Amino acid sequence: MSAVIETRGLRKEFVVRKRAGRFRRTRHAIAAVDGVDLRVEAGEMLGYIGPNGAGKSTTLKMLTGVLHPSGGDVRVCGFEPVPQRVRLARGIGVVFGQRSQLWWDLPLRESFDLLRHIYRVPPSEHAARLARCRSMLELDPFLDTPVRQLSLGQRMRGEITAALLHGPAVLFLDEPTIGLDVVSKQSVRAFLAEVGARGDTTVVLTTHDLADIQRLCERLVVIDHGRVVHDGTLAALHARYGSRRRVVADLDAPLDRPVAVPGADLESTEGGGARLTYALDQPPGALIAALAQTGVLRDVKIEEPDIEEVVARLYKDR
Ligand SMILES: Nc1ncnc2c1ncn2[C@@H]1O[C@H](COP(=O)(O)OP(=O)(O)OP(=O)(O)O)[C@@H](O)[C@H]1O
Image (cartoon, rainbow, N blue to C red):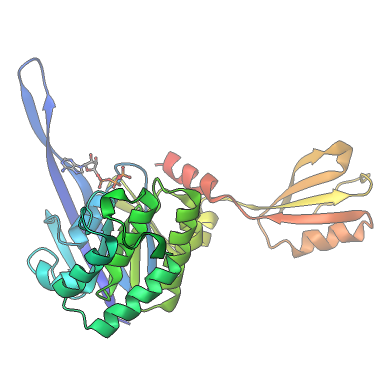
C-alpha cells in the first residue's frame, strides 16, 4: 500500500503580538504544529484528536493547502498541497465547519449540480454517488431547499455529500458532528462508518466527540502542543493509560470470602456483598469461571473501559 498522506517534521509557527506595558507590544512565534510525522495509507480511517488549541485544525489546513507550512515536508495524494493546490483539489474532499462549499441562495440540488460541472464529473458517476448520499444521508426531504434555510444537521449532510461527489481519494472532516442533534449525529456517523468500511476513501477526521472516536476511528493520532503523543488503536490508548475492564457480578447470597484471581482487583462491594465489582488487567475468563464455581452467581456483566476517562487522563498527564 502506498501512503496517501505523508508528513515529515511538519511545522507551523504563528507570530503573535503580546502586550508588554501600556503601549508596547512584543512579537513572538508560537509553534502550533511542532514537528509532526504522519503516514496514512490508502483506505485508512484516522481520528486526529487532541485538546483545544493542540494544532489539529492547523495540521488539516496544511494538508489541504490552505496554509503554508513553516517547515518540514508534506505530500497528499503525491502532491505538495500549497503549490499544487489545484491538482490536489481533485483528490481530496474537505468539510470544515466554518467554510461552506455550498451556494447559500441555491437549493442543495443545484449546488450539487454546479459542483459536477466544476469538477467535470461524468454524469453517470455523479448520479451514482449522489444516489448513495441521498439514501444514506436522507437528503430528499430538503434537496430543493435553499442552503441558507437548512438546519445545521441538514447542512452538514449536504456538505459531506458535496465533498464526496467528485470521488476524492481522501476526505478531511473537521468536527463533522459538532452542534448536531442526536439524529443527525447518528446519520453522519453511520454514513462515515460506511465510507470507511468500503475502503476506497481515506478519511481523516478531527473530533472532540468521544462517540465519534469509538464508532469511527480505528487509528487515533493524538496531538498535544503541536506534537504527536499517541499513534495507534483505541485499545492501545486504553492499555497505555491503564484503563481497565470491569466485571460486575450479582450473587444470590454474599460470600464468606471474596473470589480472588490474579489480575482482578475487587473494587467495590454493594448490597451487603450481593454485588461485587472487579477491575481487570487480564481477560475476564478466569474470574468468571471462579465466580461461577461459588454456586451463587446470578448474573455477570462486563463493562468496557470508558474512553472519556482515558482521554481525560491523557490530557491531564501532559
Ligand atoms: N491564524 C492564527 N494566528 C495565530 N495563532 C493561531 C492561528 N491559528 C491558530 N493559532 C494558534 O495555534 C494553536 C493551534 O490552533 P488550532 O486551531 O490548530 O488548534 P485545534 O487543535 O484545532 O483546536 P480546537 O480543538 O480548539 O479547534 C492555538 O494556540 C491557536 O491559538
